[in-house]
Image 1 (cartoon, helix red, strand yellow):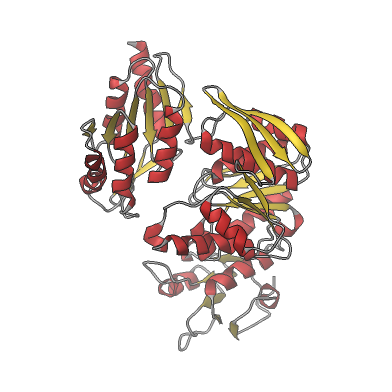
Image 2 (cartoon, rainbow, N blue to C red):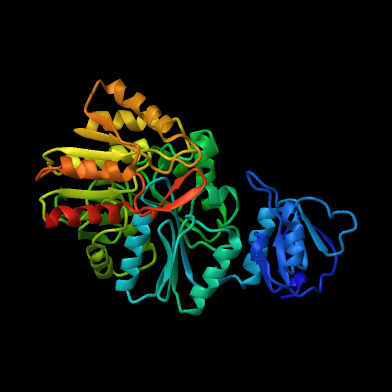
Length: 488
């Protein structure tokens, strides 16, 4: 593609060089640059992309995009953008010929529930004989692609390339988990969303956004990306959802349990085998059953129904799709065993998510609840004592351990959590910084009828300790310990 075509509709770019230059690809990492590429020198949290221009030149970059002026005596074509991230996203959409315009795209944002909602919608679309794809926290997948996700929403060039590849495979619908970071960093600019869904908002990523209002403002951006086309689907029971509804034009579709929602759940039963639910919607009422457990999944089911109805999916396919999803990796994932233990792995890594998890289990009449969890290092420290307080109030025995300590001392993180536990007055806890040892301890304490919850890392298959990434997956560790216990 010629550079002049790549820049079509991209605002705020000062051009210095050859507009007829043939562009063979786009990269934001100098290591990914190949001959004929445009290299976007973005400013990151720790490094500035301009530091890697020399490496990009050596790898064959012919055009450079930056917010800084062209360096003295630099001979290659230079694009100085008022907003380099915006320019990168729009150039990427141009380069891949706007694949999102040729399929239905659903963007799902919010603090909790994004992954589950996309899994539910994926099953519903399959039941309708469509070909769905998903870009989200666990994986990027389509009928012939499955890649473990490095981040919830990838950078624009990768995102647009995946959409183009998915379109070439015949994908009809793409379900994208849209993180607040992706919205702030403009990764999804240039994507034509047909539906934008807001699930809920609670305290997370405040190390990045600093306040809940700023976190909300980041999430809100999704609903204004292409406002002439987009349909908003919003949880009207959530306080931040109510705020969002008040700030959007008319035409919002709402879901919830409170009267007045367009898609309203009623007469629900939260059972040990799943959820039974009656759903009132504009065209009538449907009865659904889901093997998923707990009240948070009640909202995820309603969200998926609201979106599916806007996509004109038949009620029969909605029911079948919801019923067919047994469980999701790392989302209240049941680890089967012959010891009479109820063992679950969950991604709950905030105080609100941990509270929802524990309350869900309390509703299943457990003999005891044994909880294993920690908190990530170099992330929002304010949530740690709140998580400890939730654990102290709602679990019968808690084992504090490491999550991904990153550059922090694991014991310092645990000490922050412990402050919250102590606030509850309970002494029913212990500290084992080694995560495998903590899981082994929980399984040794467990007796028939107990619920053992290993929380925080969910589907993740690694642990980050200092500068090392160590293979570690809670579910696999649990299964290896169970294998020994069950054969004893």
